[in-house]
Length: 127
Length: 110
Image (cartoon, rainbow over all chains, first blue to last red; front, side, top):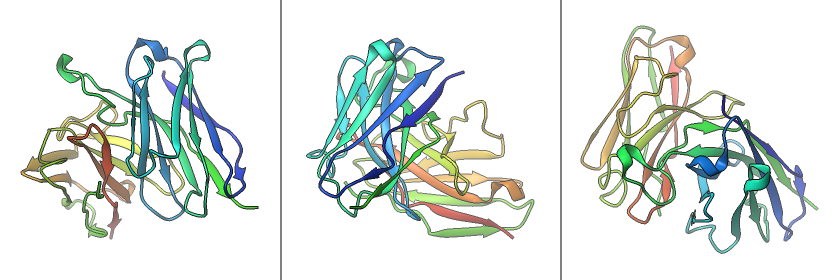
């Protein structure tokens, strides 16, 4: 059974960097799929942040691209999110998820949909 | 990229059918058959209900179905049950190799 679990500081100061990790169990990251991050501000909808393949190939939301880095740690079967220069617009529940990308053998960069999700991690921004 | 357009809310009585629309452009919904739908109950993580326009994963009830025409995709829930009351989000792959969500639709079971 594949499970994803987010972890990291729940409180970040304005202008500092938000860092979260997603630990994957029950499946090896190097076996395939893209792995991604999604966030949801309180009371609002979902926003895709970006995705990564174990090979290092990434795809980012254009609106966040200048501040986001997603990386993969194959030795620990996990991947991470860094969001720099956080502001009052960045508090949210941050989810990690798995993304299939090769339906019928035709592969697509970045992943196509989110089939397995973590429980989410709430991040607050405050000094 | 702009969010896909969904109605803010829909409602229906138990046993009835409802449809939620998701309108995009020729660069996302209209470009590929890679529209997905997610159910989210309050305080919970989203759950995949439909992928690739109309494919149901094993955990998704047969009462959920998806379709697409042009730049608009639709999610239909038949035989409404109280447990279906939740927020629903559509998502689409885009020609820029990115993903975009809809704003979400709150389903109320009367």
